[in-house]
Length: 536
Ligand code: KIV
Ligand code: ZN
Image 1 (cartoon, rainbow, N blue to C red):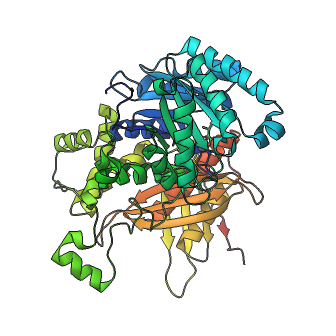
Image 2: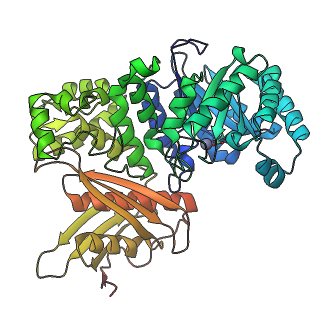
Image 3: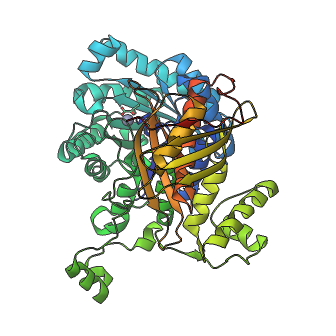
């Protein structure tokens, strides 16, 4: 990778899915999922990965450190850790990222009057002094330092110029201008950016960066306006996930620059064919669904429904299509290997898709592939991705699914019998009657796991087309009635009831790992079968 520097037509893509994105309600990720996403971001070609906020907890620090070591290779992305403007935060960020080939410390302090008075209880003079000290301290540890004046877009612009000038003098190499509360409009943001670039002392020696939130639905427009005004780094997340209404979505900015070169004249080094895959991975792991009409990566983004549109598309695709599905990696390339395919061909395809598996993992994945190929005529790349993610990147397995039998139909009483292996190493079987097969399955699982959770979201979709498609289920559960935290789970199988059970169990396992599961045997004997009636 070429090193960051001031290149007029090049935009540095700074991905903060694992930091600002993970702050989305319910987006808790396991460390295996974080590593997997970081690897995929590197494959996508992002320049900088903000891997987390190491001072938040020892787990967060460890997660960032793993990414720094495993993904922060010399030809990989810069690995960045976020820190408040305090020595202890900066020390923790440095500890987490120092093993990356290209580490960056990102420190921030609020500069709007409302934040300084009510949150920080600091005067302007104190803020300026702290910025100088802490940026200087970060620079004494790391050659690459980014500074953000939080809530910049509601700050006094002249005060901002002063704060940013001090940050540059103290050694900041990137200055980021966050619209923390998603308040600014594109014309205002461009004007602010131009003023800051022009008036900040030695402002021509740093990279200027945009960071927008989507509270008024203007994050992408604001980001593009900031780039047109001279910024050369865009802070973005996959699928636009993030606090409240989210951050600017990576795929929207990248595809706007890619599709309208005459307007922007700016390039990125993103491999756009990896966009769909990255989007699916982030949605599956976080449990945050992508709305069907979402630009670039929504399920309907390339569907043409109206007859007049379909007619036009048949005559020439450019009548209604400004970019092809292939450009964003939506082509359904099929593995032309069916059930007679060999392990070698499977390994080769996995490598082409970017998966590096050990021999034992390959054997495990190959078993699953054979099972799938027995049920489906052709296995697509999307099927393989779902299979690998299902097999290797789920949360820590506290309870594992050992068996499931469901009886349903009309008229009838949908009944599910579930066998789980518990943390005590024993098998537990329960049966339950529900309003439908999924409800019965979830009630039987609940009866074994005995951890109160409410199902807040359930979605089923087909990964590929055709009657034999792999079904994919994404769920979100809330810990208890009043709990704010939600946990996502994902499962894939040709049987959607099995996929539903896997998804629910994945979410429960994540919740139990987070809340700390007491290593106790679930109630009841391993061999006992209790039939639970549906709640009226
Ligand atoms: O939105 C924001 O202000 C942030 C900063 C920490 C950069 O995320
Ligand atoms: Zn933010």
